[in-house]
Length: 320
Image 1: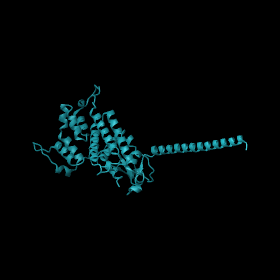
Image 2: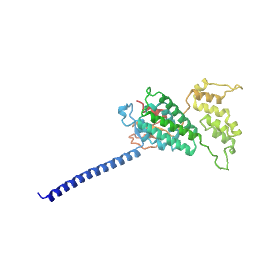
Image 3: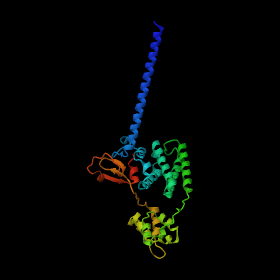
Image 4: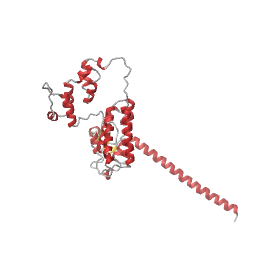
């Protein structure tokens, strides 16, 4: 047989083999790219999640707390002032009682969202106290859980949780180092407003600690912040008449001391939660989403089927 013919046949086979390998690799890369694009579009387009009524862990499928963090776009929600407090309260509740039930991906999403919250506060210098309390709650819970290794279940390596605790301490230090600079504004100030407007603004504060802080700014504001009617309205807003009757405190003048009663009440009962925007559950199709988010509802009037969920209600959906 002609040697040149043999060499040519071997060469052709090698070329054919290489060509097949190339085609397979090219098709695989194309398929991977298509899958990646499909997943990305699916992730960004559908910002809602299906929650089966009376579901179990098996029937839930992908509908877990970690998946909900991704699909409901909490990272963007914290940039919305109407949703910020809602997300922070949700993180606080998880830090208090749900850390042991978080999967690995849920842990990662939780810490990522928390980091974005801290960075936002460091940048705009708002809600500092709220985030300090959140970080302290999380750190306290982790201290307890880490000391009980073997008795409770924290998913993941213990060294990773210790590293996260160090990160939390670093964030706390950054928040403590914030020095709020007074804006160089020489126009009308709060104390220049008519007294009735000042009182109207103070009546819109829902946290007694804000009233106390405002009263420390100037002597005139201190007098306003001690107004009995302000504290009475604050008590009546957060607590029921029955709760108030159980915690009556009289002043030296024989009058009800609403300020002392308020701080007594918040130690005994949870305060009323108020949010500009909440997650909503559609009773018709059992889809969970932020208000205003389109979802494939078949009801004639989808808005009438929506029920607002508190942060605790949201967490309860993912308990098995």
